[in-house]
Image (cartoon, rainbow, N blue to C red; front, side, top):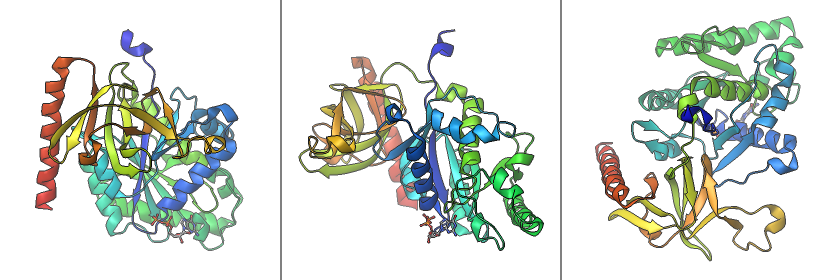
Length: 358
Ligand code: GDP
């Protein structure tokens, strides 16, 4: 019916895990890999997030056809650039999170640590499914690196003892996750992805395993989250990641739009220090491509509209009081204003409440 003709948007992916387990390195590697494999017309610029198009994921996953068959309907994956649970807490939305799926990064040689457990608790509370990236496989004694290869290929080329060693480390992780109440298994042995947490051995340093990680993130979200990923063609819904004063632009907000379409001059509602802010979008910005930097002195380029999911910067009057973590709605009718106002007030009061008790 009408619903099924609506397009699927890119799933929003966050990266969490214990300090030093390699979140930043892994994200950098994913971004780097994507840039190398992108064709010119595939670039889309984002604020606070990085887009990896499906064509890139399909190219990377090509050698894995028999392990992870991927025929992608989603346009790609949108990675939130800042890892860790501080930022994740700003991605809240009513009844859950704006994040569709998470990568839980665990140093395979160290296993689950304090902040890994904290991350799992947060993901559980917000009902965000996750894939475990068992990172730093290149540190396993005897491991011979094969830059950017799928884990499946690299593994076959390792000595028998090293293959056994990887299995032992993964098994330790499986036991630790079982203690926390999760069934888990290495990705190539998972029979039912709804019942098992998937573990993907990777190295953020050598890029090994990234093809599988991307293919699984894309394949699983597309398969299990179709309804959630259908974009409404109506007004935008988003969440404020950061409030920033930018030279020449005044106060701006960095926003992740997760549903609908936002246009210049739209009326938007969002949470502010002294209550709900109602204002009009003056400009929507994305980072300027390198060659345009001289024209766009601020480093940003203005666009007329943006379709979910995307990271954009918005300038509008009255944003100096905006609050990071607040929901943002664009409204196309007068009646909706009161409804959304109430909804934002409710959500913001819960945030303050939770801050007070922590
Ligand atoms: P974060 O705190 O989780 O963001 O961790 P970082 O990405 O900053 O990484 C912490 C340290 O681990 C840095 O010195 C990285 O170079 C190193 N590191 C990250 N990933 C890998 C990996 O896959 N292999 C190896 N050998 N080192 C890594």
